[in-house]
Length: 170
Image 1 (spheres, one colour):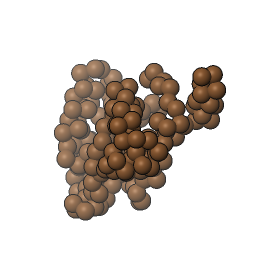
Image 2 (cartoon, rainbow, N blue to C red):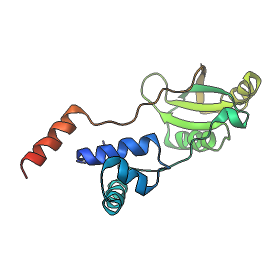
Image 3 (cartoon, helix red, strand yellow):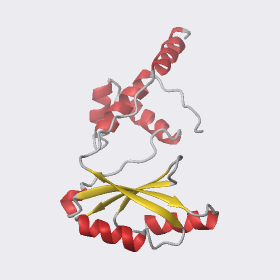
Image 4 (cartoon, rainbow, N blue to C red):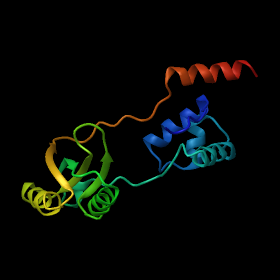
């Protein structure tokens, strides 16, 4: 389990703004959260150093590049040996259709998020790159009908209470 990082309300405001739009300039971010630009820059550097902010990426719409059909492929491996898991993960991550690979618990071992051009492309992908792999025991496809509804990471009530208590003790 990852170590929890103590964040104060200003850190959470910075994170909220960056999760909404990470392309914002430091000057604009500082204005939005009510800090001098140098202090804001130091806060963001600290959040990166702590591993709270792990990356800043461009989000590409797969439909805009001809991959308008997305799916999750639930995969069960057989047997569960390290070399087979490593072969599966490296093979799947090398596919241009793969957007994400999740290791999960339950009856399935992995969920593979893919983006393809159409149902024929999806069928070829499943048949040629999943069901033919010797380590794959079962693969089941789930179509995605809409864009994901994504929520930002927000403070829990306990995080806010701890921040208030820390400020009060100063």
